[in-house]
Length: 137
Image (cartoon, rainbow, N blue to C red; front, side, top):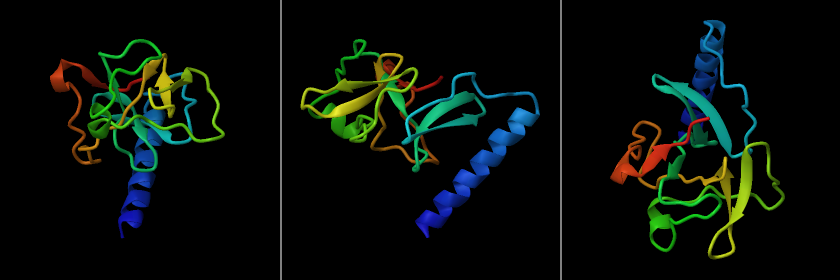
């Protein structure tokens, strides 16, 4: 049943995106992204989400370019966006290596994370500690 709900949500989001493009509000110019990422529009603008779950993606102000600071415990609440075995950098998306040797996506040099406590209905991590923000193009 959950799979059906996710499929319906994805279809609805695609309809909204197509509708807004027709209304003159087009998507950002650069829309290429890894396969586990999608671009959606809400009432505040364009945001990247994890695909297929559609939960928001985040960046952390405590990170340095290409070097994640969210490690050992932090990464349990804010899981890094993983890179598939055969994936390669794509446009503004690069691959960084974490402290444990795992690979994580970075957008414009900023490591990208999900949030364990988020759901599609309640993406509540934006602004936490003044340091976590939605990933936007």
